[in-house]
Image 1 (cartoon, rainbow, N blue to C red):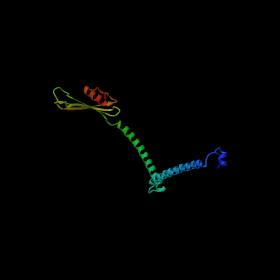
Image 2: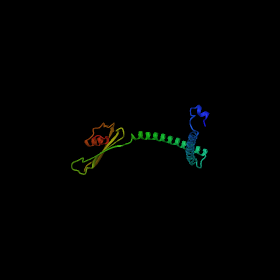
Image 3: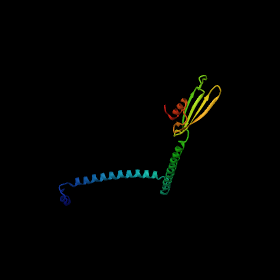
Image 4: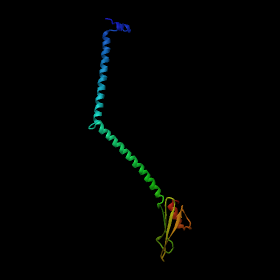
Length: 170
């Protein structure tokens, strides 16, 4: 049996059996694709239900808004902390933070290195040197002011060593 439709498209000599087998193969292929898509959809539904478990759209929106508000608060707190840290660093430059200490024997007759020179400087190398001299007759202490790493009064050897130590100069 010959089909007019198949003859018009150039397949007039093709047996109907082959034609139906081809259609059946296409139907089976489409059926397999539908089953695969149904399985994917089922998996997606399970994930969606797990995500929305115990929640509705309103409570989920509330949770998201709460998280956004927390994020805003954390950003503001971080900015405040940055400003506070900058202020602390500015204040630290005026605090004594560099120290140099040299112990020595002021007089040859004494031992134990009971005399010392102590240099205390801030971040801008301003501060003082405390020199304490111990002898058999008593102890004497005096201070020399340091501005920008220099003293107006001439420094002794031990005092200069303490100042260099505080400034990190070897």
